[in-house]
Image (tube, rainbow, N blue to C red; front, side, top):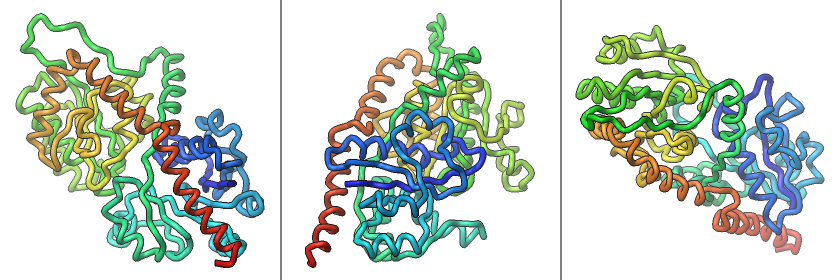
Length: 383
């Protein structure tokens, strides 16, 4: 079986723009390892002729070509990072080839927010694919997607690998910085917490991943013990700096009052954490699975989060419970250094389950591809 995966290329592109760009390569790597797959290629839906420079090494062996050039080179096409041309989709489906929509973004937010907030959104034609694949985090939206797209919807495994983090870590080392949490010597006075430099790295472009609850968690922890937080950095926030609601919230913080809040633009995780922060506080709404969490855990940094999917890793708080989140942050300030080895052991077990090379993940994707392939065989046989 020959598989094509859509990618979006553009000027100045970075693999750190969003998790979807990385996800393409993790899926491609997994599919290439399957005995039933003879070729995996990338279908270019953008205006550049190359993938982001950070992905060039991993992209070796995955031909990048236009949709038209890929017509006779694929049996199954997965629309993932770039939107496919509808005329081409109709043409290849008429030839008996199958199209799968890999829905990685939160589908409800993707439908509703552009309309309510008058923002651009990408939407093709609803009835354009033979199957939809979703991640565990979006299981609740399967009936909605099935109704909207009029096709079967299946859940597939979430994939992650530290290959991009490792490569970026080597780059920052050449600049004299070190990625990864550095434990401090044990305090002679056990009552003193470590003063954490906390980063909030939510993208702040949707209600499902936003700075507000993490900022309140940090401030609540600071009010209870000002020694626990040395500094709070809110990334992806400079575009909101003059908005009255944003200033209302941030100026209410004791941290802001004491000049311990720093507003910053977007930065890649490795570059920022290796220089400016040593802890992460996060919040999500119906978006349990997030590469940010895995990046933080891989670096050994304290991660205070509310993802039920990661309940056994990091420092978990329920829902939007600010007091519980603050308690977890204070616990990390006191205990993370001492418990670091166990923290990393739990994280490594999680990473192994998410690997593109994990046998269980490979088997599930192989099953999905074989299901699509059987549809091709049935059609060829006249059924």
